[in-house]
Image (cartoon, helix red, strand yellow):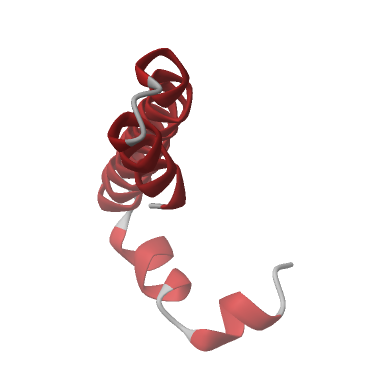
Length: 72
């Protein structure tokens, strides 16, 4: 958000080339965050599919809180 404010301020002051620098930085940050979010969603989907493919006896064992505390 701060990079956008700086970019707008520089543009209003007539510094068009300098205002593009923070604008590009902010754009790259948005793209990076989008890719990170997409990767996290993909990992969550893979985990959900893997858990759904487990046999019922193992799936029920993983739903207990004991599995989270002590993993044998």
